[in-house]
Length: 162
Image (cartoon, rainbow, N blue to C red; front, top):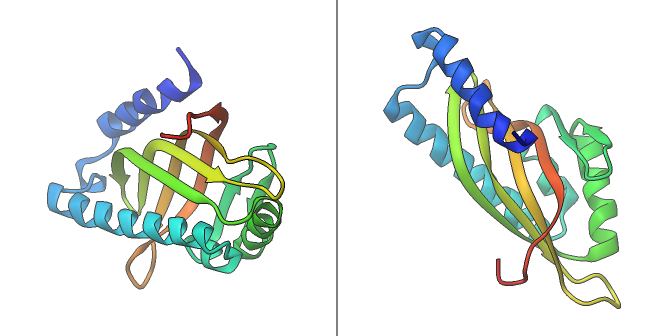
Protein backbone atom coordinates (compact mmCIF):
# COMPACT_ATOMS: atom_id res chain seq x y z
CA UNK A 1 0.00 0.00 0.00
CA UNK A 2 1.45 3.36 -0.94
CA UNK A 3 2.20 6.00 1.68
CA UNK A 4 -0.48 8.29 0.23
CA UNK A 5 -3.20 5.65 0.50
CA UNK A 6 -2.45 5.06 4.19
CA UNK A 7 -3.82 8.48 5.22
CA UNK A 8 -7.49 7.53 4.69
CA UNK A 9 -6.90 4.32 6.67
CA UNK A 10 -5.29 6.29 9.51
CA UNK A 11 -8.13 8.77 9.40
CA UNK A 12 -10.66 5.97 9.65
CA UNK A 13 -8.85 4.57 12.68
CA UNK A 14 -8.80 7.99 14.33
CA UNK A 15 -12.50 8.46 13.68
CA UNK A 16 -13.41 4.99 14.96
CA UNK A 17 -11.50 5.43 18.24
CA UNK A 18 -12.23 9.14 18.79
CA UNK A 19 -14.90 10.01 21.32
CA UNK A 20 -18.09 11.27 19.63
CA UNK A 21 -17.65 14.66 21.31
CA UNK A 22 -14.47 15.22 19.27
CA UNK A 23 -16.08 14.56 15.91
CA UNK A 24 -17.70 17.45 14.10
CA UNK A 25 -21.42 17.29 13.51
CA UNK A 26 -22.58 17.54 9.90
CA UNK A 27 -23.55 21.23 10.17
CA UNK A 28 -20.25 22.03 11.86
CA UNK A 29 -18.37 20.17 9.14
CA UNK A 30 -20.04 22.25 6.42
CA UNK A 31 -18.98 25.48 8.15
CA UNK A 32 -15.45 24.16 8.69
CA UNK A 33 -15.24 23.04 5.06
CA UNK A 34 -16.32 26.54 3.95
CA UNK A 35 -13.59 28.08 6.14
CA UNK A 36 -10.99 25.72 4.66
CA UNK A 37 -12.18 26.55 1.13
CA UNK A 38 -11.75 30.24 2.00
CA UNK A 39 -8.25 29.58 3.34
CA UNK A 40 -7.40 27.69 0.16
CA UNK A 41 -8.63 30.67 -1.89
CA UNK A 42 -6.28 32.94 0.11
CA UNK A 43 -3.42 30.47 -0.52
CA UNK A 44 -4.13 30.43 -4.27
CA UNK A 45 -4.34 34.25 -4.41
CA UNK A 46 -1.06 34.64 -2.49
CA UNK A 47 0.81 32.45 -4.98
CA UNK A 48 -0.79 34.23 -7.95
CA UNK A 49 0.38 37.55 -6.50
CA UNK A 50 3.78 36.09 -5.57
CA UNK A 51 3.17 37.47 -2.06
CA UNK A 52 5.03 35.55 0.64
CA UNK A 53 3.54 37.58 3.48
CA UNK A 54 -0.02 36.87 2.29
CA UNK A 55 0.78 33.16 2.05
CA UNK A 56 2.25 33.13 5.55
CA UNK A 57 -0.97 34.64 6.94
CA UNK A 58 -2.88 31.54 5.79
CA UNK A 59 -0.82 29.58 8.33
CA UNK A 60 -1.27 29.40 12.09
CA UNK A 61 1.45 31.41 13.88
CA UNK A 62 3.01 28.05 14.84
CA UNK A 63 2.35 26.56 11.40
CA UNK A 64 4.83 24.56 9.39
CA UNK A 65 5.20 23.35 5.84
CA UNK A 66 7.39 20.62 4.48
CA UNK A 67 9.20 21.79 1.36
CA UNK A 68 9.73 19.58 -1.67
CA UNK A 69 13.43 19.32 -0.84
CA UNK A 70 12.65 17.95 2.62
CA UNK A 71 13.13 21.20 4.51
CA UNK A 72 10.72 22.20 7.23
CA UNK A 73 9.69 25.85 7.31
CA UNK A 74 8.25 26.59 10.75
CA UNK A 75 6.45 29.81 11.62
CA UNK A 76 5.08 32.58 9.43
CA UNK A 77 8.41 34.35 8.96
CA UNK A 78 10.14 31.21 7.67
CA UNK A 79 7.18 30.35 5.43
CA UNK A 80 7.14 33.86 3.93
CA UNK A 81 10.90 33.69 3.29
CA UNK A 82 10.76 30.25 1.66
CA UNK A 83 7.83 31.24 -0.54
CA UNK A 84 9.65 34.44 -1.48
CA UNK A 85 12.70 32.45 -2.61
CA UNK A 86 10.48 30.14 -4.67
CA UNK A 87 8.62 32.89 -6.54
CA UNK A 88 11.88 34.77 -7.14
CA UNK A 89 12.95 31.73 -9.18
CA UNK A 90 9.67 30.97 -10.95
CA UNK A 91 7.44 34.07 -10.82
CA UNK A 92 3.70 33.99 -10.03
CA UNK A 93 2.21 30.52 -9.65
CA UNK A 94 -1.23 29.24 -10.65
CA UNK A 95 -2.23 26.86 -7.88
CA UNK A 96 -4.85 24.17 -8.19
CA UNK A 97 -6.29 22.57 -5.06
CA UNK A 98 -8.81 19.75 -5.24
CA UNK A 99 -10.02 18.75 -1.77
CA UNK A 100 -10.85 15.06 -1.61
CA UNK A 101 -11.79 14.72 2.05
CA UNK A 102 -12.01 16.70 5.30
CA UNK A 103 -12.49 15.27 8.76
CA UNK A 104 -12.38 17.01 12.11
CA UNK A 105 -11.10 16.00 15.52
CA UNK A 106 -11.59 18.68 18.12
CA UNK A 107 -9.88 21.90 17.07
CA UNK A 108 -8.04 20.32 14.14
CA UNK A 109 -9.31 19.55 10.66
CA UNK A 110 -7.50 17.19 8.32
CA UNK A 111 -7.77 17.86 4.59
CA UNK A 112 -6.52 15.54 1.86
CA UNK A 113 -6.46 16.18 -1.84
CA UNK A 114 -4.60 16.87 -5.05
CA UNK A 115 -2.47 19.97 -5.72
CA UNK A 116 -0.82 21.47 -8.77
CA UNK A 117 1.47 24.44 -9.37
CA UNK A 118 1.81 25.89 -12.88
CA UNK A 119 4.51 28.49 -13.52
CA UNK A 120 6.91 29.79 -16.11
CA UNK A 121 10.38 30.47 -14.78
CA UNK A 122 12.30 33.19 -16.65
CA UNK A 123 13.75 31.80 -19.87
CA UNK A 124 11.89 28.49 -19.54
CA UNK A 125 8.68 26.99 -20.84
CA UNK A 126 5.58 26.58 -18.67
CA UNK A 127 5.81 23.77 -16.16
CA UNK A 128 3.17 22.03 -14.07
CA UNK A 129 4.05 19.99 -11.00
CA UNK A 130 1.73 18.40 -8.52
CA UNK A 131 0.73 15.49 -6.40
CA UNK A 132 -1.28 14.73 -3.29
CA UNK A 133 -1.39 16.59 0.00
CA UNK A 134 -2.40 16.40 3.64
CA UNK A 135 -3.07 19.68 5.41
CA UNK A 136 -3.88 20.03 9.09
CA UNK A 137 -5.93 23.12 9.91
CA UNK A 138 -6.24 24.55 13.44
CA UNK A 139 -9.25 26.41 14.79
CA UNK A 140 -8.15 29.91 15.82
CA UNK A 141 -9.05 31.44 19.20
CA UNK A 142 -11.08 34.24 17.55
CA UNK A 143 -12.71 31.86 15.07
CA UNK A 144 -11.62 30.82 11.63
CA UNK A 145 -9.11 28.19 10.61
CA UNK A 146 -5.41 28.41 9.69
CA UNK A 147 -2.91 25.83 8.45
CA UNK A 148 -0.98 24.13 11.23
CA UNK A 149 0.90 21.63 9.06
CA UNK A 150 1.12 21.22 5.31
CA UNK A 151 2.63 18.22 3.56
CA UNK A 152 2.60 17.82 -0.19
CA UNK A 153 3.81 14.61 -1.78
CA UNK A 154 6.07 16.15 -4.44
CA UNK A 155 7.58 15.02 -7.66
CA UNK A 156 4.56 14.27 -9.78
CA UNK A 157 4.62 16.04 -13.14
CA UNK A 158 1.13 16.69 -14.41
CA UNK A 159 0.07 17.46 -17.97
CA UNK A 160 -0.54 21.21 -18.59
CA UNK A 161 -4.32 20.77 -18.89
CA UNK A 162 -4.68 19.34 -15.33
